[in-house]
Length: 302
Image 1 (spheres, rainbow, N blue to C red):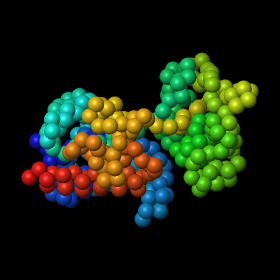
Image 2 (cartoon, helix red, strand yellow):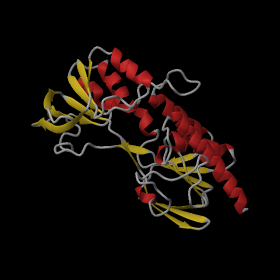
Image 3 (tube, helix red, strand yellow):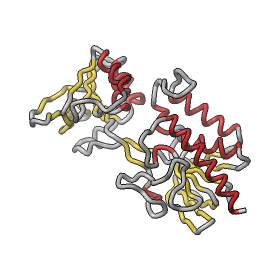
Image 4 (cartoon, rainbow, N blue to C red):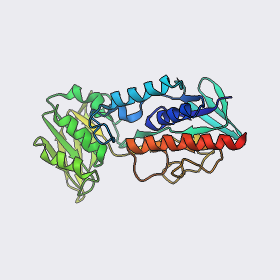
């Protein structure tokens, strides 16, 4: 029997682990991939209060080490099922089975795919979902970014410093990112914005060689690019919990600001839950709230 199990070792999950340990509980964090979540791939964080600049990798590593130093345990196992038997929650992974009375779901998100033919074939051969992971492979080449939010514009900025030219393809007539990000994009002379357009074809033989873009009038244009970086949205990783907690129509966990879900003893934190702002600061806040709520819930069982 574990004091608390946290599913996910991103910012929300590790923040929850820190608050759990400081409350005198022993937290077990289960992570299916690597610690840190998506922020690991961000080259420069400049909107986290109190830290003017830090890389995503350094931020995540510092948070991870802080949780470990306080006594939290992190095990790399993918959670495949949760069984709620009232006070006892059984968490099944690909390797083991655990029991706890307090469970925090902080699974985060993954990048959404376009859904075009050849997308899977060109993955790793010109189609990428992580600019900071793969951008260096396309130094001094022409590339494109598909998307119009903060992630897409951050990717474009990063690539503009490496590549000869960057196209940003967005299906609307204006970006939906923060104004500060938009201003930076407009200042880059080697970025071309392609508005009111969608990517309709991926062309090439052994690797991506060009993309077809169609505007809202139906006109098509071929862009010769060495790579396409996709940043068109995210999918919450809540499939394993859909029969345990309430999800909205997009698959996000319904939970309040304190992390409470519709099931007593099960809490949600971070990007996997319904919320209006998904940022590092709100993920850390979610983790702190969920762990504190779980602590108070456990007190009611004594």
